[in-house]
Length: 126
Length: 126
Length: 126
Length: 126
Image 1 (cartoon, each protein chain N blue to C red):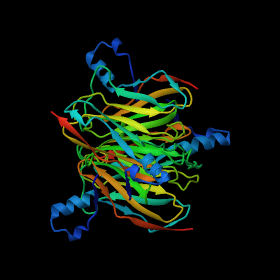
Image 2: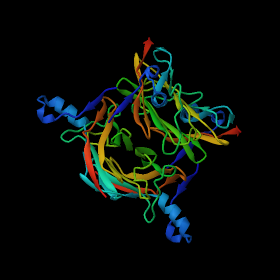
Image 3: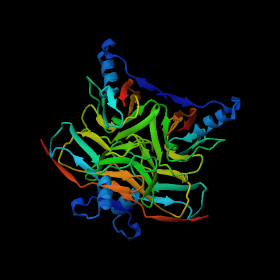
Image 4: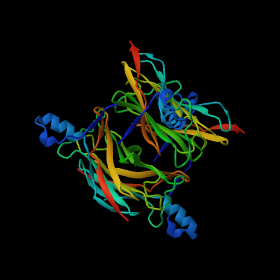
């Protein structure tokens, strides 16, 4: 199956395409350093400049958080959780790292399929 | 199936039982008022005074967030996400309310089954 | 939260209520005996006499399979998997028992909440 | 993240590698033709010649069923559902097609990551 990837929207001329890419792309917001054995917050938020619908037939269904090839956690949403209005779906995960992490988010839109975020490296000091 | 409920641990004499109940109980941390149509943060955290193991054969597997009889979202965890050490699993959900919510969390421990939090009412001003 | 339970629909006079209860109730179809250590099929099917919608805003979202207080497996469905027409959602789980099981299914309809099946005992011969 | 793919194990010389690939690979077992609007069974089974462990720290965590870029359903397993012994995890999904499907299964092993099955085309007669 096809996994869509983020493209730098500042390089995209057509507004509709910028909107399409941005509103489906997950962004990982976290510190870039963590302390070994301590709880570490990782926000995943979908969209930076644009909003995604929350319609019954078209919504963000789930967000998975990965460290390399290892899955850490997943959040699923029911349609309507964002009040049935366009929004930027988000969730804060809390994980406890034991070594440097390479975080990616994988998300699923019920109409436009799978999207993989850019990878974010989090250095872990022991 | 049996759904365990929180009991006020200050009323429980035996330390082991206080620990058992507290470390399995989900607590909802949020404001008690929300604004209609605006994103609203709901933290669910398991345990207040005690820590739950994160062992492969014994961990908190998932947290569901409910508004009355309607499910809003669910987060699943893989064993090891908390560094394989005792911890208080938590997640921040973001929802957009359209009317007063009665939030409960339902959680599952792979060894000690289902636990339901106390209900928290969130008034929604339009 | 409220968990709805099956009621014997032959005792219910009103057709609409029989339909409502039947189309939301999960039924466990399996042998009543299993062999220890051998794969065992458990069909869970929702509805016996009536069909449930598969509309975007109203569908069967998931089915969990439990053995007593222990969760074995869960199947989630996306709206539309049943062709967007009324149907009886079903799934065949395969589990390997090591002792007598007390199976129940817990299911969720996006409009009418949680439903728990009757319990089915499966004797396990070693 | 890396998605592993099936390789024809008859072409692989080393037994350990054949075992590794086969025991992680999902195979779709279904008819190659379906009738529009009628329930259609799709078995997904992991492994043909070899067995995968069902240990707490190493098991098959979930199986997703896709039609092209559209997710249809997902089954998650708790460790121990296969009796904590090596086995071939399987599940029978039932879907109702409205047009030709291109089915793939995506699965996750808690130690060896993501695996994608070969695609199976199911022609749908109306």
